[in-house]
Image 1 (cartoon, helix red, strand yellow):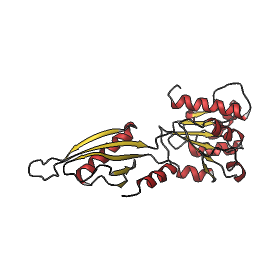
Image 2 (cartoon, one colour; image 1 turned 45 degrees about the vertical axis):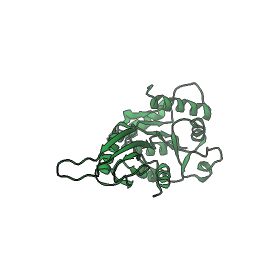
Image 3 (cartoon, helix red, strand yellow; image 1 turned 90 degrees about the vertical axis):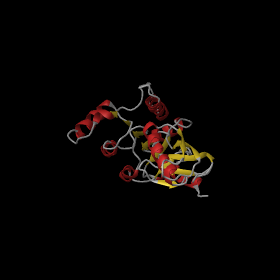
Image 4 (tube, helix red, strand yellow; image 1 turned 180 degrees about the vertical axis):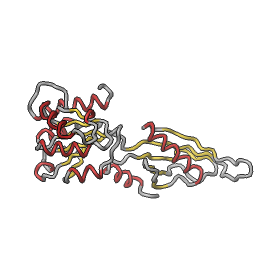
Length: 253
């Protein structure tokens, strides 16, 4: 049996969306047997097998439907002879489960607000990717163990990240306004459901003026990011941002 558990763990670490196909029942003569598994990626690549032939083709088609609707599904595949075309004669039942469909938060900046936001979002659906070059900040003990840390330049992360208009959320909270603007400029050409940047209305006015004419959809940006709760401490700001992220994820705004 192939190491499908190891493959799922690898895909989880990469935050790679996938569909896990499992043969739940096999009756009569079939190429795949109960328990066989295959993992399908959005680009059509797949790992493992449910027996090849017609069942595998059907599984790949149904997996594409899972990605389109982001919902699990089942399928029954009869392998009966049609006319002169031979077939195994049995029946296979498949269960297709969407994997790694949690919303991903790409959090640029591991400063006080960034660390507080990581803590506030513990226990929520968000899978947090924290991006910062500074060793002493990104490896701080205050960052929860479940956060995926990327000690790299923001450009490197943006280039390699998995972007999706349904499940990608971005918050920009670096230590420098100029860097915030540079990160925003590189983020905006990518699909994302939410793009927020910390700052005042005055700061956003300057950033908007600087980026005008660069064919970027600045209407997507929420700045100042977060609900106005009147607080100014890192934790209070983090709570306001978390509130807005959750409201967007659950379709409340």
